Length: 151
Image 1: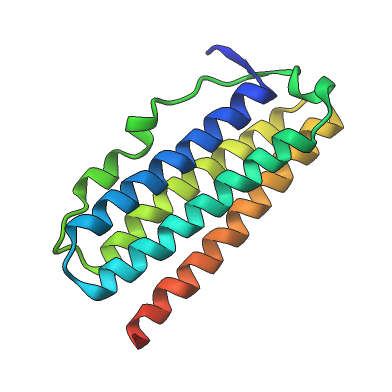
Image 2: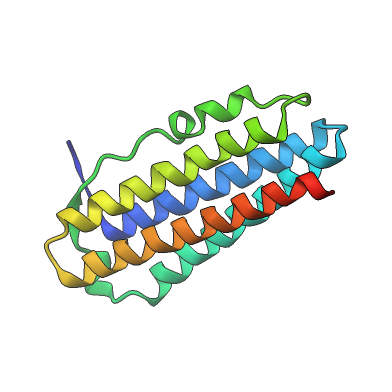
């Protein structure tokens, strides 16, 4: 296992969200189904909000905490998003939501593990806050996705 700074971890998290957003936007161009397009737009905004939130945490954190080292080996972003390759123009809304939630679950688990292993209270609080934010956004996205049945 390798080590990364908090800054590296936050940059990695932001990139995961940005890549997911770009993927959803690309898929929007390929679909002809209105409900799938609306859900992809919703998921794109979801990822955009989370990428911005991670950037805000990074920008507002003290320099000292950003330089703190943690045992963390970032997974290849392509591996994190590998299930997204299953998305096609005929995908059901339910299958799309399930795939999208895997990205959120990966980051929630990562943040929770980092919080549990953190040596400093500041890092523990940062990663706990990120896990809670990710969880709240996940719930919000699921609620919005479920409402697509009303569209």
